[in-house]
Image (tube, rainbow, N blue to C red):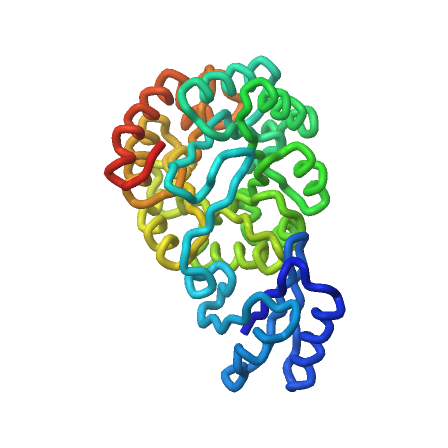
Length: 337
């Protein structure tokens, strides 16, 4: 069982709930974020009555959840989570498109990309200031300078920005600039990082790990939610299988499955899911019909000269064509773009 305290709950009210649980012979796990605190009751709670806690001062709700991912589950919340990022609704009727280059390479590159995706109709600008790479000799990103360039692109275009954070120590710095913090596939089970982003209220974009099950992904999301940050976005970006034709195997099944299991928004990343620019549009359109709440698409003004992931990046004109196709398809999925 979990007990969700009201955002306005006092320390005294929280302590009373915790002491009541302990007096009943159970252990307690506290998860505190900026917005609220969750009291987890550890042990066989079948004999406990939810109403016993729901009448206590400071308690918003008590829930008995069968899924291991408690707060992320549909049992916890039947309706879809929708939240606002600088005026962009994520998880609602509108399909949200995040677009931009894999990495921030220069001021001219990121500004050209930002204006191009804005003109085509993208809602959020993506770009990596820090890049986890398989090879230690590959470009690792511009760091804080890249964050400053993303902030300048936001100022010029009005697009919110999403960028990756690699470690718990960097969370305060990246959150100072970014509107959404991305946790990449390699870090999906970096629990210290998950807890760190869970203790702030900046939305978190959580990518599925390379060989992770859907339950693995949802349990990773649970770390963030249980730490107090309810603004979490799930991302399907392909998993590693035996095929070598594509970079990854994009799991289209994951989209409707995650929508059934969880109330959290689900975004599809067909760029990493395929690794080939010519396959991005078909998988993007399939993801929309499958029920995705949005798309993350890599767009580079000059893919052949990209410092990372050029092979899967769309040129701006191809991205604009895809946006037109998605607008035509959106009504079939009872959505808008």
